[in-house]
Image 1 (cartoon, rainbow over the protein chains, first blue to last red):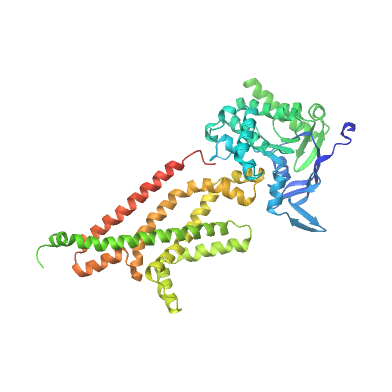
Image 2 (image 1 turned 90 degrees about the horizontal axis):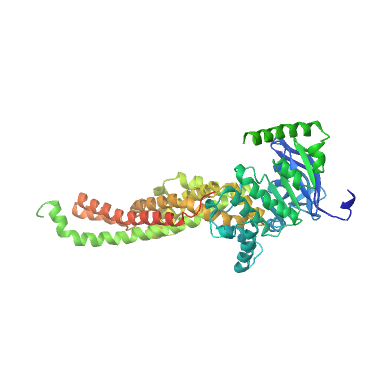
Amino acid sequence: MPDDVGRRPLLRIVGLHKRFGTLEVLRGVDLQVLAGEKLSIIGPSGSGKTTLLRCINWLERPSDGEILIDDQPIGETRSGDRRVEMRDVELARMRARIGMVFQRFNLFPHLTALDNVAIGPIKVLRQPKQEARREARALLDKVGLAHKCDVYPDMLSGGQQQRVAIARALAMQPTLMLFDEATSALDPELVGEVLTVIRGLAAEGMTMIIVTHEMQFAEDISDRVIFMDHGQIVEQGPPHQIFRAPAETRTREFLRAVIDRQVYAAETA
Amino acid sequence: MSGGPWERFAAQFPELLDTLLLGVEMTVIVTFGGFVVAMVLGMAGALLRNARMVPIRMLGTLYVDVFRSVPVLTQLFIIYFGLAELGVKLDPIPAAIIGFGINGGAYLTEVFRAGIEAIHRGQNEAALAIGMTRAQALRVIVLPQAVRVVLPPLGNFAIGLLKDTSVASSVAAPELSFRAHMLVDQTYLSTQIYLTVAALYLAMSLPLAYGVRKLERRMARGRLA
């Protein structure tokens, strides 16, 4: 795209493979994400979307291939054919710049909402506690939960927990946000509040990769949509193209199945 | 000797109790010392079993397998008599503390490992994702939650240890049971003396159980992931 000239790739994935035993979950994925870009990944379950996301911050160790953040390889460096594992501290430092939001929230149950958000800055960035808590309060306010600062996660709804989780990721001032089916575990009536927060972030220019089953949301928010199947990128392009005029049969079949289901759900709701 | 055993017991009770209380003191010392040693070894063992490198993990497994599979009495004999033959002469009390500590450490290694594993993998991942190192994730996120999980089995262990210290009488550690055997040999008041001993063990165990339960309630903040 011509308006991409001069925008640098924030994330570059080259020849990514991931095998679990004999099961090949990712079969050669190449991908570049520009700074400020909003990318959605759709596809049937088992297509490798989540694994791809988890490889980016090295929660999953790729079997082969390379992932570069700001031109810096994450997880391991290569000298010739040898792969040298990165030191734990360096890996942690790189992960700190990549925010991740999980399907199951994974809030820390022994900490209040405020401390869930502040713990990263306190422990990782070594910020003074007062300052970290002040900024955490502002972030909880931003996701509409200023009144829940002192509440433990088990007293929050799923939607509220996920918003705290987003604030927790933002507290590290990430350059890239990864959303792994952030609304899939939520009751339908709680999905909206989380999507609203993500939309707000997108409007601020945050670079984000979103794995989602919310097709309408993906269409609205993305600069680019990727359709994955069987561990490969089948098709990608601007949302109107993927959703309105997909080139590949597999994409069409998937969209028909999903959209039928969502229309059905809407009609019976 | 005059009167029945209960009259004799009543008459001698103050002296008997004095001797038994000396034993109580030693029982508390052995229990406490053994518990501290077992905690330290248990934590070290759990860290070994949680290590990334296979040989280190195997070291932890070996420790558990060996020391959990041999009766604590045998271990005490080896430490007390076996080491003496090698020229390391330990007093019965330190020998008992070391023996119970090593044996209990193997048991607690498994308790702590299970506690760490009970914490959902997502907790560790969330901690890593915000940039914590593996050690930080363990210390700041996983362990504080694991503590709540291991508290009940830890209480069990402490009470079990308190009772098991009676085994130390076999290496002549002058704890409660050892004193009781001696007194029975002297007075033949076995029923009376062992009932007293039972009451003394109860008096030590019950506050311990109560304390653990109170601690559990105090730490029951939030839900476990």
